[in-house]
Image (tube, rainbow, N blue to C red; front, side):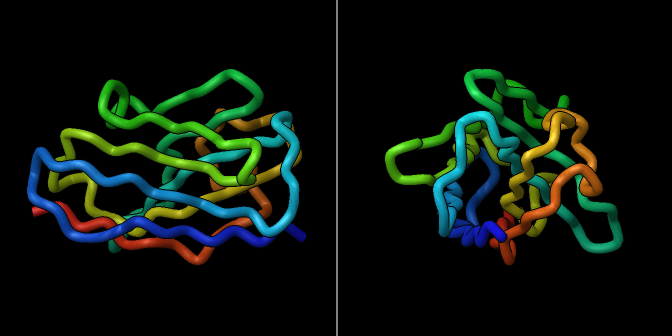
Length: 122
């Protein structure tokens, strides 16, 4: 079982930036699916960005503003969020899986989850 711990959330003004981090408790191969999801009150958890090997995918709502990356030496996943908007406000979750549906953006395709970190944009 892979343990994931997110950090870096907080409150920012619209147009500001945040960098989220996700530390894995064990080594995760670059071939693993790694992703960021978010969930706003009253809404379903949605995929924001994902990475497997050198390939990345983004939700249309964050394309051009968010960047997902991974530091293999530290077993840490990152999400750089720029030009933040109020609609980005949500609980952000780190996720990992060994499956092949990394870019589905669906919660059901990821089995390992962090506890979440809150992002609030005003």
